[in-house]
View: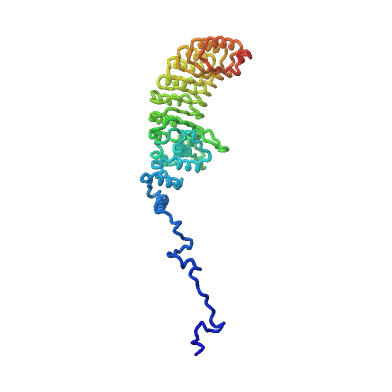
Length: 435
């Protein structure tokens, strides 16, 4: 018992282990006035309450967007931290910071040339976003609400739409039963779905700032799935588009290329564009427009404010060119006319040249590749003697011949306003081309 009552300090070695004398200074935790759960905690890295609030705003921006109430420095902090994936319903009409929209564009498209959009990243984003929706719109499958929901968000920023494809409806393969073998082919054809494309009537009148519209009724990259009906601009398409164009009062530039626009469709479009308040440029190149369509365009010339007209690579012949020339002789606004790659012949070429005797506004005329010969060269020469407004003339890829070249040279010698005359591949001779 005496051994049991012996103090620990006098205990023999091996019975009680020695206890080292503790030094409080050796344990930093014992020297702190505040002991945190995190051993690396320090007063020096405690975030400011302002930063904590801003981080909370960023984290919950979608549910409760707070931006305009912040001072500039705080607003810049929040905008830098916001993710580009936020819904457009939240950001479209709230965020105007170009840095944010630049991140949105670069995160979505590999190529982003903001110079084509007046150096506005926000405009680029909404124009390309709407273009993508329209180009992937499948009639009878895609809900039009997908387009209409975006309109209130982008209508203030969209000034140009370049639609490079328009998809037709999905055509399901026909199903045949043995019992139907006696049906005629005409009965089967009547059940085909409509091939009409996106209806622009639901959109254009709502884009109050739209100034330029470029359309191609076709499919990009169809590859081995090629079918002619993928490139069919139907009459209903044309009618719907024409009505939509009439309602778009701000439109200045219209381009419809490679869309099989023929005479009937051209006449439909022109009838709705008459007296349009703002249209300045019209491009219907690479289509199937003939003389009847040309007459409709001629009527538009003097019932519009057109300054530029491109109708190259069509099927306009002499009578169509005469109708255009008649309108040109009375026109006072057109500055640029491109009739290249048509079939005017000397009948049409001489008519256009004679119109230059009365027209006092046209500055650029392209008659290249139109089967023109010496009589047209003579008519152009006579026009150059009197005309003082034409600055550029293209007669390339015609068979003017050596005599036609001499006549042209004589006319140009009396003209002091023409700055450029293209006579390549016209057989005028080396002397004329060198002069």
